[in-house]
Image (cartoon, rainbow over all chains, first blue to last red; front, side, top):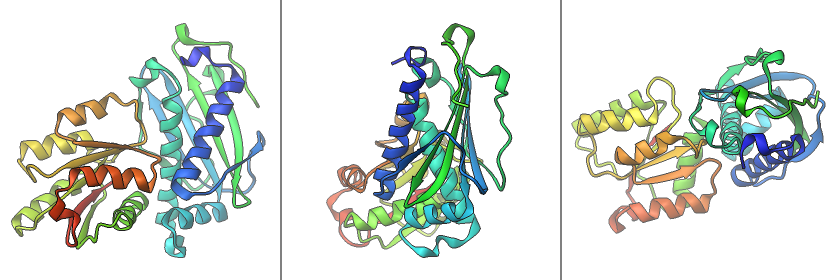
Length: 168
Length: 132
């Protein structure tokens, strides 16, 4: 399915499926959709950029306690508490969500490159400006009662643009 | 480092009693690890290599490994979160014998690795070179 053929709802469902798959396969845990409001108390974020024919950004934001829980769950041990390991876990999650998302964007996107995750100890600044987006959306999820937020934005070539709508 | 630890754990849970898993944070460190192993005459049985790495990515690691003739004949599995990346095909052309998409299951790791290792390497003492 090409990116321009998707409705906003379909794109949201695709992201929900991608996030659910990552948690099911890598952590053997379910991941619940909480809605569009951002999680509060963000302490760490990771951003992956897509550059090329389609430009996009995938941002995941975690309260520190959730990020620590993520690292422990991925590694299957409590010794994941050190900061570098927690940052890496958040980056890996962002990388997997961004990669899965890219595969839903159609042939044009396949020629775009994914960056390595950039980690920030606060909310990372948007790299795709709001007025340049053909799509922007945000979803908050929870695993083991711990929330985190995924935000996506795309700037597609003019010929690819569908009607731009935002959930925010 | 998280993915390297996950992969090492998955390999051990797959029934591979690894004698040692060498870790490298990027392609450049991976090349150094292979050179070091060759200098010590250590046998490497398998290389797992992420496509997205800082400093030197997976494809460039493979090309440079080939150019330097490091670990010739050792099977390489590339791991990627971006299954639509055209560079995955380039990696296969550069010698990668298996691909694993992230996220993955333990079963997927087991199936892929078992198909590439000779029977002797599936026994205890197999070693691996786990890159991220």
